[in-house]
Length: 80
Image (cartoon, rainbow, N blue to C red):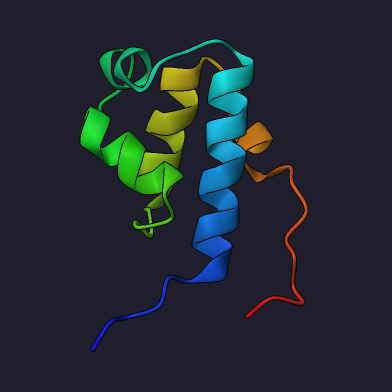
């Protein structure tokens, strides 16, 4: 049986990908500048990973942004 992705993780991942691409950064760059692997970054962006607070901080570090920017997006609460 296939487990459906949590839409909130998918939305967050899409937001992270948008930030990264907007900054012109690769997943490799983000991984190199944080304590994450490229695989971690990819899993987050695809909504396949429910991340810990420390991972959120490392992601912000790798992107070179303040952690609060990662949480500044609208959650589509109408989608389940």
